[in-house]
Image (cartoon, rainbow, N blue to C red; front, side, top):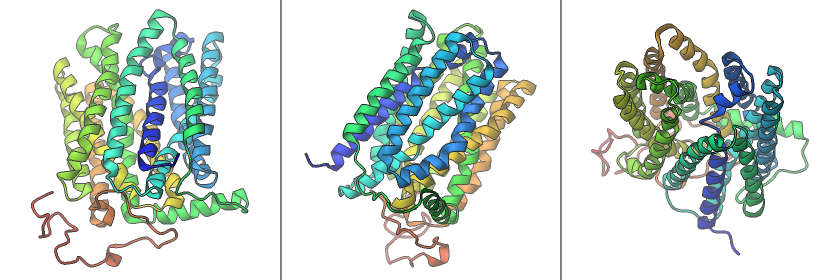
Amino acid sequence: MATTSRSIVRTYLVLTLGNTLAASLIWGINTIFLLDAGLSNFEAFAANAFFTAGMVLFEVPTGVIADTLGRRYSFLLGTVTLAASTLLYVLLWYVGAAFWLWAVVSVLIGLGFTFFSGAVEAWLVDALKATGFTGDLEVVFGRAQVVGGAAMLVGSVAGGIIAQATNLGVPYVLRGVILVAMFVVAYLMMRDLGFTRRRGRSPMGEVRRLVRESVDQGLRRPAVRWLMLEALFTGGVGIYVFYALQPYLLELYGDPHAYTVAGLVAAVVAGAQMLGGLAASRLRKLFHRRTSALLLAAGISAATLVGVGAIERFWVVMALVVVWGLLWAASEPIRQAYLNGMIPSEQRATILSFDSLMSSAGGVWAQPVLGRAADLGGYGASFLVSAGISVLGLPFLALSRRERHPADTQMGAPAEEPPGSPPVTPSQEPPIAPGQVWDAEAPGPDAGRA
């Protein structure tokens, strides 16, 4: 049977569904699981820090693997690594292992996730272009947001129910089983279309070449560089807010043992992700430039965090959390399409992995800072600081916008950036043709739209 754009999208959605379901089964109970294993609070959160450090450490190397051996190969490695390390977590919990073992396995779990980041998205974009896809990438990414949100909603709720009915280890075992199933699905359904595996070169030489070209096509391209630097701020804030909302809502609710209320955070974010994914393509059509939508969403998101920290009323905060989740979910597909439109196929997985690394690195520095702010002034104060850090990312979005890259105004699938081409500077941009609008403020048929 011939591979079509429709079948590529269907496979992408199935992989998104399975991976998100597996991941979300333990989101609502992970900290409780670590404490039940005998770790102190400090050790439990330190284990999470080792997980984040593992993602930072392995983002680029696993992206290089995806760009040299193939995106499918990278995904298969990810399912095996993550399934094995998850089951090791259960073993450590069962025997009450020492902290250093938790640290090692947490790094391995981070490694497992990095095999996925960048590779699946790069596989999708390359395969769609190879099969003649002419639609909007925002629609595809938006549908993935909906599917992922539904899986997250089901997984986070089911994980708590299963743990309550059995024990804290069972959701982790089920996660491993689902990942094994995803290995089978990917083995049968994924094919690297639009990507040529490089042969006949030394692995280390290939790594050096890819890293060098990725820097040329990534950080040395101003529009891409500014977008990645913005993730250093917004990525760290997003990680902190998601996890800090759980104890904050319990505090506002007045019952520290109302764990169902804490689980509402994951459920609310999942629901917002579904609605935001549906709205992504509509939001994009309201703006001539993708960066206009990104700047507006980022600004309102920061204002929302101010409200979360300043208005200490449970239901008001819950409503603001919904708004915050919607803004993230609606803007993320637009950002994905914008970034993909600025990078060539050969380095796509590596550059996307590096972008994910920047977001994870933001979590490494921002979480301790915001956690200390919570210790000194309470969770409300830490959310105000979070809003301030988010605002620091706005100038980088504006700088990316100033480059006027064609991907900022492009509709549909991204045009291919020729591999090895020099970074585009504003002076190298083609002149504005009559009636063509590069900037929202310029006159033309699209005047009046942001």
